Amino acid sequence: MKIAFIGLGNMGGGMAANLVKAGHAVNAFDLSEDARATAAGHGCTVFADAQEAVKGVEAVVTMLPNGAIVRGVLENDVFGHAPQGAIVLDCSTIDVATTRDLSEAASAKGYLMVDAPVSGGIAAANGGTLTFMVGGTAEAFARAEPILAAMGKAVIHAGDAGAGEAAKLCNNLILAATMIATCEGFRLAEKLGLDPQVFYDISSKATGQSWSMTSYCPVPGVGPQSPSDNDYKGGFASALMLKDLKLAMEAAETSGASTPLGQHAKELYEDFAAEHGALDFSAIIKSL
Ligand code: NAD
View 1 (tube, rainbow, N blue to C red):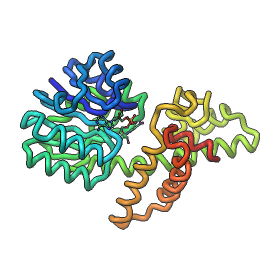
View 2: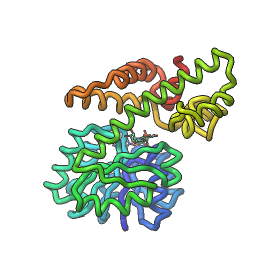
View 3: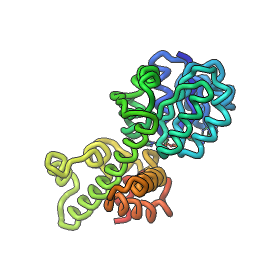
View 4: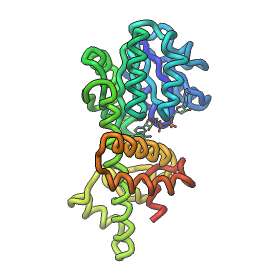
């Protein structure tokens, strides 16, 4: 298939490369020249203009920082520029209301659309092992599924438009709280005189185990390679985690859900991201 890919950052770069590996022709666009150069190295055809990139494609994938940017790109550069009947797959994490709104606008302009946010981090984006949680009609899901399968290990239909984003916000609320708890456990273990590797060997096989510990350990030199081993550079920026927590707390308020730990995690990331927003979210261990 001919696919346009917009947003070639920490996540989108590897995802676009995996579409090329699966045999798709990928038209790639990002505002960053460096990101475009890397995508060209991975076999994408790069464009300096999003409207040009979406001409003649069957699908458009977006992997962008937030809802306002996704709205701007879809309304200005995709709708009316990509061929009618093309499917739009927004893999960014954004709020449920914006994604539902954009899905309606897409359909009014003659496109299919799914929200397909991801879980897994950059290692999974590069390795093609992301989990996609997808919102949209059965028809849109059927069209999106084979495209997403080339970038992931699991593609799950969560429900109608917005359901993918709803699942993602709930997942990241759990992720933020377990990351902070994992950091606290390692700090306390250290104060009590435990070697971090020994504590890891125990807790990773005990009930304290979580993805935050065994796939993304916040302590350098312990567990598999993760952003902590690279001075917390790259990975999933604390500012993006804060964005997700704010969206989750807004959703909790409008739906009447009780989320006291999520609220506390949001406050801790607010403090941390004010100074260290570009560092990976596991760097919150530095604040403890
Ligand atoms: P990133 O900041 O590394 O990448 C975003 C890219 O979008 C950048 O390269 C930027 O130049 C580009 N961009 C911004 N505005 C643009 C525009 N108008 N047109 C074209 N390109 C534009 O962010 P990321 O870590 O890749 O995250 C992308 C999305 O994925 C976010 O919504 C994030 O919440 C979500 N996410 C990230 C992770 C992670 O581990 N990093 C995991 C799951 C989900």
